[in-house]
Amino acid sequence: MNMREKLREIRHNLRGILMQWLLLQALRVAPPGGARGDLAATLKGFFERECRRLRETRK
View 1 (cartoon, rainbow, N blue to C red):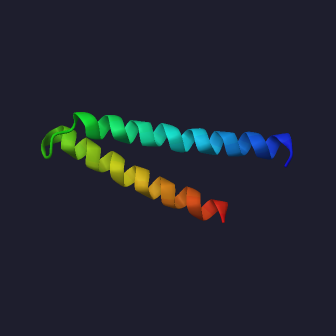
View 2: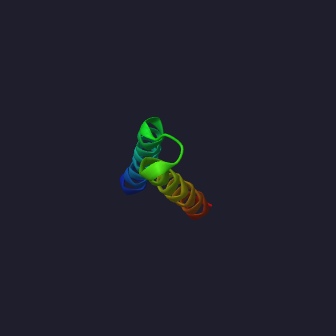
């Protein structure tokens, strides 16, 4: 594995960690329903789609 591939993998992993952290922050402050709940649901949907996309691109 050359340096470019290693950096790409690190970037990929950091992006996944950041998305998980953002989702957790949104869910932590979000009561069910209301604007915050909508934000959490939106972020959760985005996070799940992004994870699926990243998994598919790694195959």
